[in-house]
Image (cartoon, rainbow, N blue to C red; front, side):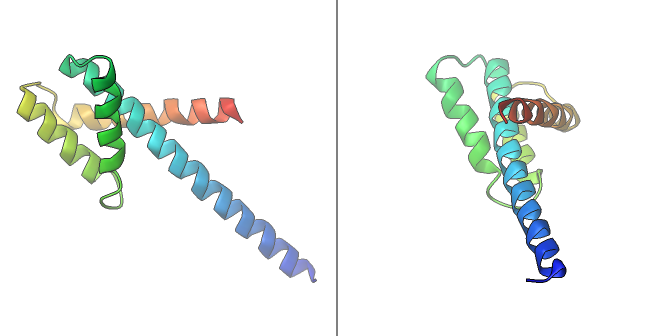
Length: 107
């Protein structure tokens, strides 16, 4: 095996690791975001877990965050909770930082 082949395998491994890390971080971010929103909606107990799971699932519809934001904006409007899309997006971004901290602390 040549040095080039070795380097290629290392880069492929790093790419796979980074992709897995990002997937886990996005899922955790969405769970944290869903739990926060559930609190804003006045949910408790199993309702919090169920709502957080819905938010996580909503991120599988399309690439990016538009699907998650579309879902939570609609949920806020349906529940009469006054949270702008901008504020929701800001919270979503802050939960990504928290999710990365939690994942890095576990490894």
